[in-house]
Image (tube, rainbow, N blue to C red; front, side, top):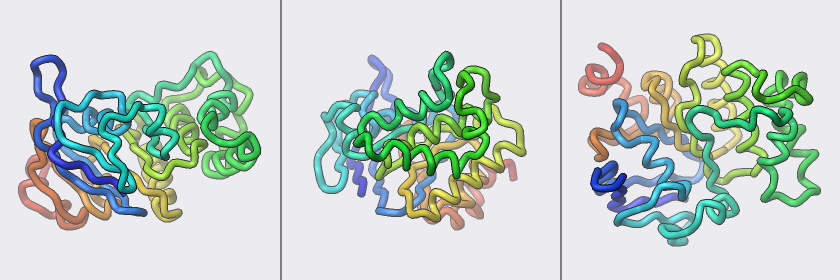
Length: 233
């Protein structure tokens, strides 16, 4: 589904990504792990089209999208749940979800809302409340629900468990597992490397903007270098 070849990206003179190559197959859950500042979020932003690419290529379902605008990538099916949730606080929960469906035909709106409310029942209960009044965990559910309203082919999840209590972290990862079970293709970035690797089909380890390791999630979970650097073992 997604092929990234020798991708580089910069912030001014600072190189954030250098010669990154990876692939995501249809239906896979791929984890990106690494320390803060390794370039994980930058890579997701480059894939969603909001971070310029200096060199290299990005292909989605065989089409070269390296220079394609972010909005057109959304229409193709690449949708990002941004770090920090970034919900529209003054708007109601349901209006946030409706905004997520702007690329879909109006006839699909009711069915989309029904699916999201089934996945996150608390959002159904709070559908008329302002999004800014939700807890951090509920806002993360809303951000994920808003992305799912687009019916994404590839879901980019950026730090979905950041700042959440352990119980809510478990709920978020349970949701990610259920999306994977429903054949949603996911590229997941999360500081909780253990949880991310435990549910990933495959994973890539980023170090200072480069791919340092790659392999199956369960293999990297027991890799001594990964355990020492990211799992505290």
